[in-house]
Image (cartoon, rainbow, N blue to C red):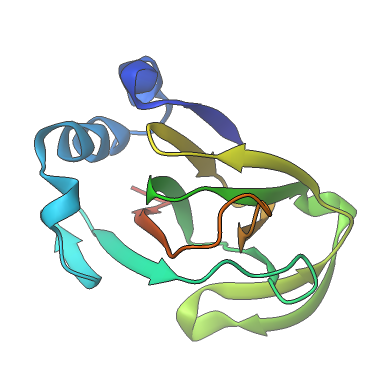
Length: 151
């Protein structure tokens, strides 16, 4: 897992061959104007998902993992606690292979993700998004860029 501010995103461009394209998109796009939904990001196999949701509790938010995609998550409005635990410390509850979504069980630790920050979750990272902080009760608006692992 990587957690940093978008101003430092260029430091991570060499981590994966598609990260430079993803961070350029985040830097050069009016993110606030994007509609909720999913759209492709170029021809690389990456996808941009814009989502809005009410904050969840730790009990109602799922701990999840992905095998085929890396997540780059950016909060645009609001703030969220985001749980993290190494996948090796988790047990698998369910596996939706077609949608690259594994529900996991494990003891997450939490960090706060605010506008201007990003988090990157690799296949070895279990994460629990959209948990409310208690100090913010509005909708959380965020972008998730799905980056294919094998490219």
